[in-house]
Image 1: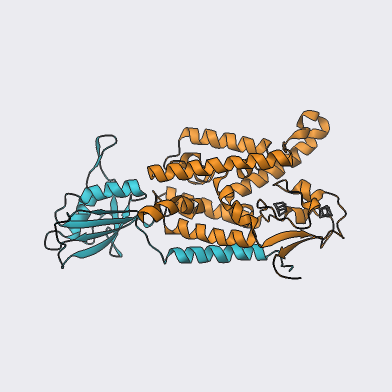
Image 2 (image 1 turned 90 degrees about the vertical axis):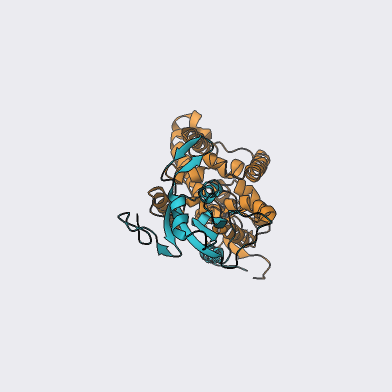
Length: 144
Length: 264
Ligand code: SF4
Ligand code: SF4
């Protein structure tokens, strides 16, 4: 059957938009790191925060970001969705707070490859959909 | 052409915004090859590879649908490297046609291999694809970023782009200058991955054998060196539906776009 030539661009636009729409319906992590052993139980009061972190762009940088909260007492699980710069952190609210977690993420990072300590690698842009810093670097949710 | 320019401007805008730190969306997230690269890791580890994500995967799945419907229309209408290759091909043809009249040296540029050799050379893309998929899966990194013309040209000196990346892209562009569509035909990993789906594509260029005057203009204009004037339907998995053949055909209604499987 003969079809008009404009069928081609129309198909391209429709399928691309459908693909982009579909991408918002699926979600898989780039990495998941758990900070509790098999013998430990997760407290029922555990909480989750969603962070948008500037600097988390791939699996490698997500692993670096996870290492910043490794030693924060009470952080249970770190899941990164690198393509969205989004990180989901499960924590025990009786042992830590979102502020402590964000401070750790924005703190110095030890780079295993170079053996150097790096500063200003990560910056928390949003916490649970709320901007974390304003434009002047003054914090909305914590005291600097 | 307008469509291709629009896509290139969009890609440049996306790359520039990311490079300036105004947006977190890099041009990589729109690359369907990233979807293929990450599919294996997603299947085995339920995790994405490196900087790839849902968008890459969804666009790759969408691209497979598009290819089954309209062959390699992605290459001929969307891919910025396809567009640049096509413009270089047309430019060199135009330029050297003039020069060739004055000096024989230029007559054979761009150098079109025989169809048989061309078909064989296209298989080079398969080891390229397997190498990329294998190493990406093995290392968990997009380690071929620095070789990817799309990334090197549009990321505004993005992560992993080194000076040698520009040297390689320079050589590739020079290759396209001499051998028509060299990247798309002989090196592009996505091109070979799409080929089986394109081969069964439903939209096709159909030639009215009765009306055709066999001038051969269509075959000469085809960037993929397909024998349009020798077949009733272009069923090649390499046809990008770029419509060049239709534009140059001196008679109207000889070359048409047909949807296969449905009667006239
Ligand atoms: S056959 Fe026609 S539409 Fe297909 S690639 Fe060649 S010129 Fe383009
Ligand atoms: S350009 Fe048109 S008339 Fe000439 S050979 Fe091709 S289909 Fe036939």
